[in-house]
Length: 247
Image (cartoon, rainbow, N blue to C red; front, side, top):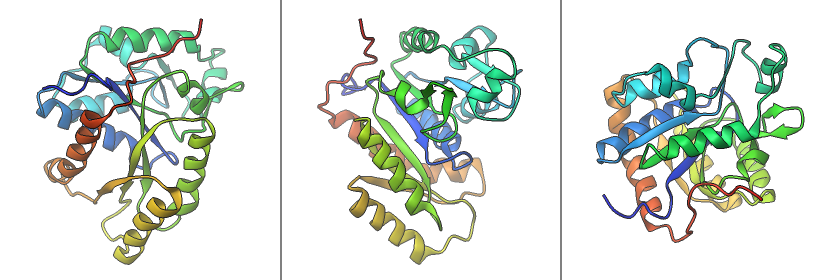
């Protein structure tokens, strides 16, 4: 496959926790590999599962990949037991997230794959430590993002606030994916949410991930979204490559 020289990694973020970020990351990993790309996955911080990062296993399972102990240290550099924001989960273990270590793990893992999908933790403005927000760390990486938001009631305020925060930090956004929270979303509301986010947020709405009853159904439902993302990557003229490390 050709056309991916411009972008070799993408960041999956969300308006909040439990919105569908991991679900989308796993589906995108599976889609990319089905297209013949050597795609990999990384999540900088995982909380609530110090032993084995559940999100890592979920994403690898979706793509039919095995979990290996040595590689998982790069895939999830920080794992904390307490299910909370990284800053608190780390403090409870007398630790803290070190940005330079994340930079190092990102670069090393990127060398192993043709394309890397990096999943955020919680929402975009979650504190990694008390003096560092996830969004501010992301500024160091020349990596476009996809924002995952709920498709139903309550999504407009959260989504527009995150878009404003991204613009303030000059973060690049490929687009927004609206993800169903259940099987009975109000279709009138969802359609208007998609239109309103696109118009008021002045962003590309990549599409909607409708509620799926099985893994197979989810994979099929995601294909148009995956193709849209791939098309944007291939068409990109941004010249972004990996990471910018200040001198």
